[in-house]
Length: 360
Image 1: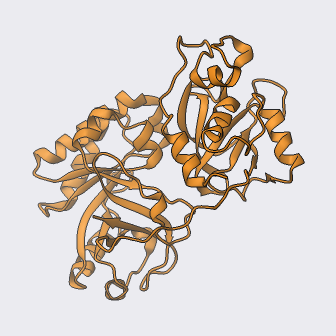
Image 2: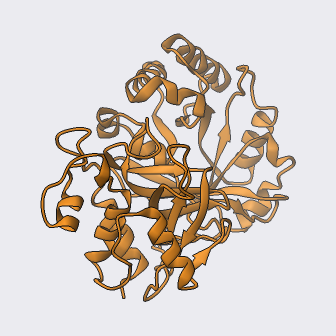
C-alpha cells in the first residue's frame, strides 16, 4: 500500500502536463491506460489520471476504470465512501458539474484540506477556465460541487515531521484581535508581529499605532505591515501603496502586499503581475523592503513566473488547520521566506484565534 505523502508527491509532479495536440484527449495517462495513443471525446481522462497516479505507487489499490461514476460506486460498495466535511489529504474528491446527467463527472486527488468545504486538489483534464475536460493537470481550489470522497486503503496517514529549531515564531494582527497584552505574547515565546496597515478605504487600521507602540515596548519586533489589495488597475495599486507609505511616515519596516482577493482573478496572471509590480516598485522607490503575501494556490497558479524569480514571499498554507505547525505542509518555492501555518492559533494575551507564522 502507498503512503498519502507518496501519492500527493506523484500527483504534484505531473502539474503542467497537457494534451497534445490541444483538445484531443491525447495524453500520456490515456496512452498507458488503453495501451495505445487515443483521442476523441470518449476518452476523457480525469479518472484515468487518478488511476495513473495510484498505479505508479500500487497496482491494486484502485479499481481500473475511466469512468468517475464507476470509481465512485466502487468506493461506496467497499465501504470507503466519505461524506463532505470529513475529508483528509489523499482522498479522491468527486464532483458534479452541469455538463451531463451523471451523479459525478469529475475527480481529483485532495492535496490539502482548508476547511470542511474548502480543499486544494490535484486534477487531470482541467483548467482555470473549465471545471472539467480542460486539457491539463492543475492544482485547483474547490469550494463547491463536491458530492463526496473516496478513501483509498493507505498504508499510513500523514504525520507531522520534527520542526526545525531555527524557526522564528510570530503572528499577524489587525483590529479584529481587539485588546492585546503584548507582554504576555512575548512571554508565550513569540518574537515578531506583522500589522495590518490600511483598510479598503485607505484609512489606517484603528489599532495600528496602539499595536505598534505596545509591541515595541514589550520587546517584540515589528517585522512588517501588510496591505490587503483590492486593486484592479495600476493606478489603484499606486493608491494603495501611497496609503501605506503615508501611514509609516518614515518608519522603515517591511511591506507585504496581500494578493488573494477573488475579484482580481478576472485580470489573469499578467494583470495580477502588473498590479503587484506597480505596488512593489512604488514602495521600493520610497526606500522600503517589500514582499508578497498569498496563499499556496495563488503562489502556484496566479503569481507570474518572473515575479517569483525576484520577490520574497510569505505564503499561507494551513493543512488541517489544527493550530499547530505540521512540517508536512510547509510551502517550498522560489523566494518563500515566511509561512503562515494556521489561522486558529491560540496565544496568551489574545482572545480568540489568531494567525501564526514562522520565518527562517
